Image (cartoon, rainbow, N blue to C red; front, side, top):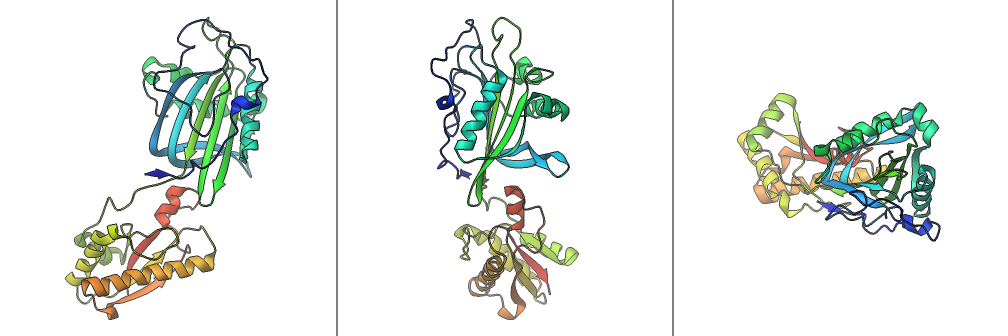
Length: 335
Protein backbone atom coordinates (compact mmCIF):
# COMPACT_ATOMS: atom_id res chain seq x y z
CA UNK A 1 0.00 0.00 0.00
CA UNK A 2 1.33 3.39 -0.92
CA UNK A 3 -0.21 6.81 -0.43
CA UNK A 4 0.60 9.44 -3.03
CA UNK A 5 -0.51 12.72 -1.48
CA UNK A 6 2.30 13.54 0.91
CA UNK A 7 3.52 16.12 -1.60
CA UNK A 8 0.56 18.35 -0.68
CA UNK A 9 1.15 21.27 1.67
CA UNK A 10 -1.60 22.60 3.88
CA UNK A 11 -1.72 26.01 5.48
CA UNK A 12 -1.51 25.19 9.20
CA UNK A 13 -4.72 26.01 11.01
CA UNK A 14 -2.60 27.55 13.74
CA UNK A 15 -1.28 30.18 11.31
CA UNK A 16 -4.73 31.75 11.01
CA UNK A 17 -5.32 32.32 14.72
CA UNK A 18 -5.16 35.64 16.48
CA UNK A 19 -1.90 36.18 18.32
CA UNK A 20 -1.85 35.73 22.05
CA UNK A 21 -4.32 32.85 22.31
CA UNK A 22 -3.99 31.11 25.64
CA UNK A 23 -5.08 27.77 26.98
CA UNK A 24 -7.28 28.07 30.02
CA UNK A 25 -8.30 24.68 31.34
CA UNK A 26 -8.37 22.59 34.42
CA UNK A 27 -5.71 19.94 34.75
CA UNK A 28 -7.01 16.52 33.74
CA UNK A 29 -7.25 14.07 30.94
CA UNK A 30 -8.27 16.80 28.48
CA UNK A 31 -4.99 18.70 28.80
CA UNK A 32 -2.35 16.21 27.67
CA UNK A 33 -2.12 14.56 24.25
CA UNK A 34 -2.77 10.85 24.15
CA UNK A 35 0.68 9.18 24.21
CA UNK A 36 1.87 8.30 20.74
CA UNK A 37 -0.66 10.58 19.05
CA UNK A 38 0.49 13.22 16.56
CA UNK A 39 -1.20 15.48 14.02
CA UNK A 40 -1.56 14.33 10.44
CA UNK A 41 1.38 15.83 8.51
CA UNK A 42 -0.97 17.54 6.04
CA UNK A 43 -3.13 19.50 8.47
CA UNK A 44 -2.47 20.94 11.89
CA UNK A 45 -4.81 21.09 14.85
CA UNK A 46 -6.39 24.38 15.93
CA UNK A 47 -3.68 26.10 17.95
CA UNK A 48 -3.65 25.15 21.61
CA UNK A 49 -5.89 22.10 21.16
CA UNK A 50 -5.30 18.77 22.88
CA UNK A 51 -5.28 15.54 20.87
CA UNK A 52 -7.67 13.26 22.75
CA UNK A 53 -8.16 10.31 20.38
CA UNK A 54 -6.39 9.02 17.31
CA UNK A 55 -6.75 6.09 14.95
CA UNK A 56 -6.92 5.08 11.32
CA UNK A 57 -6.55 2.33 8.76
CA UNK A 58 -3.96 1.66 6.08
CA UNK A 59 -6.84 1.14 3.66
CA UNK A 60 -10.51 1.28 4.50
CA UNK A 61 -13.95 2.73 3.72
CA UNK A 62 -15.25 6.13 4.75
CA UNK A 63 -18.32 8.28 4.23
CA UNK A 64 -18.54 12.01 3.66
CA UNK A 65 -21.25 14.49 2.69
CA UNK A 66 -21.46 16.33 -0.63
CA UNK A 67 -23.93 18.82 -2.09
CA UNK A 68 -26.11 17.05 -4.67
CA UNK A 69 -28.91 18.02 -7.02
CA UNK A 70 -31.48 16.94 -4.42
CA UNK A 71 -29.68 18.30 -1.39
CA UNK A 72 -27.01 16.80 0.81
CA UNK A 73 -25.84 13.33 -0.30
CA UNK A 74 -23.55 10.68 1.16
CA UNK A 75 -20.38 9.91 -0.82
CA UNK A 76 -18.66 6.57 -0.35
CA UNK A 77 -14.87 6.90 -0.16
CA UNK A 78 -11.93 4.67 0.60
CA UNK A 79 -8.21 4.98 1.01
CA UNK A 80 -5.72 5.59 3.80
CA UNK A 81 -7.69 6.88 6.79
CA UNK A 82 -6.39 9.12 9.59
CA UNK A 83 -8.82 9.94 12.42
CA UNK A 84 -8.23 12.58 15.10
CA UNK A 85 -10.34 14.11 17.89
CA UNK A 86 -9.20 17.32 19.58
CA UNK A 87 -10.36 19.58 22.39
CA UNK A 88 -9.81 23.28 21.68
CA UNK A 89 -8.59 25.79 24.28
CA UNK A 90 -11.30 27.11 26.55
CA UNK A 91 -13.09 30.25 25.45
CA UNK A 92 -13.11 29.61 21.69
CA UNK A 93 -16.48 29.52 19.94
CA UNK A 94 -17.38 26.67 17.51
CA UNK A 95 -17.84 29.13 14.64
CA UNK A 96 -14.38 30.64 15.23
CA UNK A 97 -12.71 27.22 15.13
CA UNK A 98 -14.78 26.24 12.08
CA UNK A 99 -13.79 29.37 10.16
CA UNK A 100 -10.10 28.65 10.80
CA UNK A 101 -10.29 25.15 9.34
CA UNK A 102 -12.35 26.32 6.38
CA UNK A 103 -10.01 29.19 5.53
CA UNK A 104 -6.91 27.02 5.89
CA UNK A 105 -8.30 24.44 3.48
CA UNK A 106 -9.36 27.08 0.95
CA UNK A 107 -5.93 28.71 1.05
CA UNK A 108 -4.34 25.32 0.40
CA UNK A 109 -6.38 24.89 -2.80
CA UNK A 110 -9.11 22.61 -1.53
CA UNK A 111 -12.61 22.61 -3.00
CA UNK A 112 -15.38 22.73 -0.40
CA UNK A 113 -17.84 20.00 -1.42
CA UNK A 114 -20.26 20.54 1.43
CA UNK A 115 -20.41 22.74 4.52
CA UNK A 116 -23.04 23.60 7.05
CA UNK A 117 -23.17 25.77 10.13
CA UNK A 118 -25.28 24.98 13.17
CA UNK A 119 -28.79 25.86 11.93
CA UNK A 120 -28.32 24.34 8.47
CA UNK A 121 -26.70 21.22 9.93
CA UNK A 122 -29.68 20.81 12.22
CA UNK A 123 -32.17 21.09 9.37
CA UNK A 124 -30.26 18.49 7.39
CA UNK A 125 -29.85 16.16 10.40
CA UNK A 126 -26.14 16.10 9.66
CA UNK A 127 -25.20 15.53 13.27
CA UNK A 128 -27.25 12.32 13.37
CA UNK A 129 -25.23 10.93 10.46
CA UNK A 130 -21.85 11.94 11.84
CA UNK A 131 -22.34 10.39 15.26
CA UNK A 132 -22.89 6.96 13.69
CA UNK A 133 -19.88 7.31 11.39
CA UNK A 134 -17.56 8.38 14.17
CA UNK A 135 -18.56 5.48 16.38
CA UNK A 136 -17.60 3.06 13.60
CA UNK A 137 -14.24 4.67 12.85
CA UNK A 138 -11.05 2.92 13.89
CA UNK A 139 -9.62 4.28 17.18
CA UNK A 140 -6.47 3.42 19.09
CA UNK A 141 -6.52 3.07 22.86
CA UNK A 142 -9.35 4.77 24.71
CA UNK A 143 -12.46 5.34 22.68
CA UNK A 144 -15.15 2.74 22.30
CA UNK A 145 -14.08 1.06 25.53
CA UNK A 146 -15.11 4.04 27.67
CA UNK A 147 -18.22 4.79 25.61
CA UNK A 148 -16.94 8.26 24.81
CA UNK A 149 -16.98 8.01 21.02
CA UNK A 150 -20.56 6.82 21.09
CA UNK A 151 -21.63 9.98 22.90
CA UNK A 152 -19.22 12.45 21.36
CA UNK A 153 -21.54 14.35 19.00
CA UNK A 154 -24.95 13.19 20.08
CA UNK A 155 -27.35 16.11 20.63
CA UNK A 156 -24.61 18.68 21.26
CA UNK A 157 -25.00 22.39 20.41
CA UNK A 158 -22.69 24.36 18.15
CA UNK A 159 -22.36 21.59 15.54
CA UNK A 160 -20.59 22.52 12.26
CA UNK A 161 -19.39 20.34 9.37
CA UNK A 162 -17.38 20.60 6.17
CA UNK A 163 -15.96 18.22 3.55
CA UNK A 164 -13.19 19.42 1.23
CA UNK A 165 -11.14 17.76 -1.49
CA UNK A 166 -7.92 18.47 -3.36
CA UNK A 167 -6.83 16.56 -6.44
CA UNK A 168 -3.40 15.91 -7.93
CA UNK A 169 -3.78 14.03 -11.19
CA UNK A 170 -5.57 10.76 -10.47
CA UNK A 171 -4.89 11.08 -6.73
CA UNK A 172 -6.95 12.98 -4.20
CA UNK A 173 -7.14 13.78 -0.52
CA UNK A 174 -10.42 14.38 1.29
CA UNK A 175 -10.70 16.14 4.64
CA UNK A 176 -13.83 16.24 6.73
CA UNK A 177 -14.20 18.36 9.84
CA UNK A 178 -17.02 18.06 12.37
CA UNK A 179 -17.06 20.07 15.56
CA UNK A 180 -19.39 21.02 18.38
CA UNK A 181 -19.48 23.02 21.61
CA UNK A 182 -17.90 21.65 24.75
CA UNK A 183 -19.66 19.87 27.58
CA UNK A 184 -20.53 21.41 30.91
CA UNK A 185 -18.31 19.27 33.09
CA UNK A 186 -15.35 20.75 34.91
CA UNK A 187 -12.61 19.44 32.61
CA UNK A 188 -13.93 20.46 29.19
CA UNK A 189 -16.38 23.31 29.77
CA UNK A 190 -16.16 25.82 26.93
CA UNK A 191 -13.78 23.66 24.87
CA UNK A 192 -14.82 22.94 21.29
CA UNK A 193 -14.49 19.31 20.27
CA UNK A 194 -13.11 18.71 16.78
CA UNK A 195 -13.15 15.62 14.58
CA UNK A 196 -10.59 15.73 11.75
CA UNK A 197 -10.56 12.84 9.28
CA UNK A 198 -8.13 12.68 6.33
CA UNK A 199 -8.86 10.21 3.52
CA UNK A 200 -5.95 9.82 1.11
CA UNK A 201 -6.20 7.93 -2.16
CA UNK A 202 -3.90 4.92 -2.13
CA UNK A 203 -2.94 2.15 -4.51
CA UNK A 204 -3.58 -1.37 -3.33
CA UNK A 205 -0.64 -3.68 -3.85
CA UNK A 206 -1.99 -6.09 -6.43
CA UNK A 207 -1.14 -9.59 -7.42
CA UNK A 208 -1.85 -11.05 -3.97
CA UNK A 209 -4.83 -13.15 -5.06
CA UNK A 210 -4.90 -15.28 -8.18
CA UNK A 211 -7.37 -17.65 -9.79
CA UNK A 212 -6.35 -21.11 -10.93
CA UNK A 213 -6.88 -22.76 -14.30
CA UNK A 214 -9.86 -24.76 -13.08
CA UNK A 215 -11.64 -21.60 -11.93
CA UNK A 216 -10.93 -19.87 -15.24
CA UNK A 217 -12.17 -22.86 -17.26
CA UNK A 218 -15.33 -23.22 -15.18
CA UNK A 219 -16.17 -19.52 -15.50
CA UNK A 220 -15.63 -19.55 -19.26
CA UNK A 221 -17.89 -22.58 -19.60
CA UNK A 222 -20.56 -21.22 -17.28
CA UNK A 223 -20.57 -17.51 -18.12
CA UNK A 224 -18.55 -17.21 -21.32
CA UNK A 225 -16.14 -14.76 -19.73
CA UNK A 226 -13.94 -14.11 -16.71
CA UNK A 227 -12.44 -10.89 -15.35
CA UNK A 228 -8.82 -11.18 -14.22
CA UNK A 229 -7.13 -8.71 -11.89
CA UNK A 230 -3.74 -10.38 -11.59
CA UNK A 231 -2.38 -9.05 -14.89
CA UNK A 232 -0.79 -5.77 -13.84
CA UNK A 233 0.52 -2.70 -15.64
CA UNK A 234 2.00 0.59 -14.52
CA UNK A 235 -0.18 3.68 -15.03
CA UNK A 236 -0.55 4.53 -18.73
CA UNK A 237 1.79 1.67 -19.70
CA UNK A 238 1.21 -1.55 -21.64
CA UNK A 239 4.20 -3.52 -20.36
CA UNK A 240 3.11 -6.46 -18.21
CA UNK A 241 4.61 -6.34 -14.72
CA UNK A 242 6.66 -9.36 -13.56
CA UNK A 243 4.25 -10.18 -10.73
CA UNK A 244 1.62 -11.05 -13.36
CA UNK A 245 3.38 -14.33 -14.16
CA UNK A 246 1.18 -16.58 -12.02
CA UNK A 247 -2.07 -15.32 -13.54
CA UNK A 248 -0.69 -15.63 -17.10
CA UNK A 249 0.38 -19.20 -16.33
CA UNK A 250 -3.11 -20.12 -15.12
CA UNK A 251 -4.70 -18.51 -18.20
CA UNK A 252 -2.42 -20.61 -20.39
CA UNK A 253 -3.18 -23.76 -18.41
CA UNK A 254 -6.92 -23.21 -18.85
CA UNK A 255 -6.45 -22.83 -22.60
CA UNK A 256 -4.30 -25.95 -22.80
CA UNK A 257 -6.90 -27.92 -20.88
CA UNK A 258 -9.47 -27.13 -23.59
CA UNK A 259 -7.64 -27.12 -26.96
CA UNK A 260 -10.82 -26.30 -28.89
CA UNK A 261 -11.35 -23.06 -27.00
CA UNK A 262 -10.64 -19.69 -28.66
CA UNK A 263 -10.99 -16.43 -26.77
CA UNK A 264 -10.91 -12.68 -27.01
CA UNK A 265 -8.42 -11.07 -24.65
CA UNK A 266 -10.15 -7.79 -23.75
CA UNK A 267 -8.46 -4.83 -22.05
CA UNK A 268 -10.49 -2.48 -19.84
CA UNK A 269 -9.50 0.84 -18.26
CA UNK A 270 -11.10 3.25 -15.82
CA UNK A 271 -12.40 6.66 -16.97
CA UNK A 272 -9.24 8.64 -16.18
CA UNK A 273 -7.85 10.33 -19.30
CA UNK A 274 -9.21 10.85 -22.80
CA UNK A 275 -11.43 8.15 -24.30
CA UNK A 276 -9.35 7.80 -27.46
CA UNK A 277 -6.19 7.32 -25.43
CA UNK A 278 -7.87 4.75 -23.21
CA UNK A 279 -9.11 2.80 -26.22
CA UNK A 280 -5.56 2.56 -27.56
CA UNK A 281 -4.09 1.79 -24.14
CA UNK A 282 -6.57 -1.00 -23.46
CA UNK A 283 -5.91 -2.49 -26.90
CA UNK A 284 -2.14 -2.44 -26.38
CA UNK A 285 -2.51 -4.07 -22.99
CA UNK A 286 -4.69 -6.81 -24.43
CA UNK A 287 -2.15 -7.37 -27.20
CA UNK A 288 0.64 -7.60 -24.63
CA UNK A 289 -1.28 -10.41 -22.92
CA UNK A 290 -1.80 -12.20 -26.24
CA UNK A 291 1.90 -11.90 -27.03
CA UNK A 292 2.86 -13.26 -23.61
CA UNK A 293 0.55 -16.26 -23.95
CA UNK A 294 1.92 -17.05 -27.39
CA UNK A 295 5.64 -16.49 -26.78
CA UNK A 296 5.97 -17.59 -23.16
CA UNK A 297 3.38 -20.35 -22.97
CA UNK A 298 3.05 -21.72 -26.48
CA UNK A 299 -0.62 -20.90 -27.07
CA UNK A 300 -1.45 -20.80 -30.80
CA UNK A 301 -1.92 -17.20 -31.93
CA UNK A 302 -5.00 -18.18 -33.94
CA UNK A 303 -6.84 -18.99 -30.71
CA UNK A 304 -6.41 -15.46 -29.33
CA UNK A 305 -7.64 -12.06 -30.45
CA UNK A 306 -6.88 -8.79 -28.64
CA UNK A 307 -9.54 -6.13 -28.18
CA UNK A 308 -9.54 -2.88 -26.21
CA UNK A 309 -12.76 -1.30 -24.96
CA UNK A 310 -11.37 1.47 -22.71
CA UNK A 311 -13.99 2.39 -20.08
CA UNK A 312 -17.07 1.46 -22.14
CA UNK A 313 -17.95 -1.58 -20.00
CA UNK A 314 -17.41 -0.69 -16.32
CA UNK A 315 -18.30 -3.12 -13.57
CA UNK A 316 -18.43 -0.40 -10.89
CA UNK A 317 -18.85 3.40 -10.72
CA UNK A 318 -15.70 5.36 -11.57
CA UNK A 319 -16.42 7.84 -8.77
CA UNK A 320 -14.06 6.18 -6.27
CA UNK A 321 -10.64 4.56 -6.43
CA UNK A 322 -12.21 1.25 -5.45
CA UNK A 323 -14.58 1.42 -8.41
CA UNK A 324 -11.82 2.46 -10.79
CA UNK A 325 -9.63 -0.44 -9.60
CA UNK A 326 -12.45 -2.87 -10.38
CA UNK A 327 -12.77 -1.42 -13.85
CA UNK A 328 -9.05 -1.80 -14.67
CA UNK A 329 -8.94 -5.42 -15.73
CA UNK A 330 -8.22 -7.99 -18.42
CA UNK A 331 -11.00 -10.34 -19.48
CA UNK A 332 -11.07 -13.64 -21.32
CA UNK A 333 -14.23 -13.89 -23.43
CA UNK A 334 -15.23 -17.02 -25.37
CA UNK A 335 -15.28 -16.40 -29.12
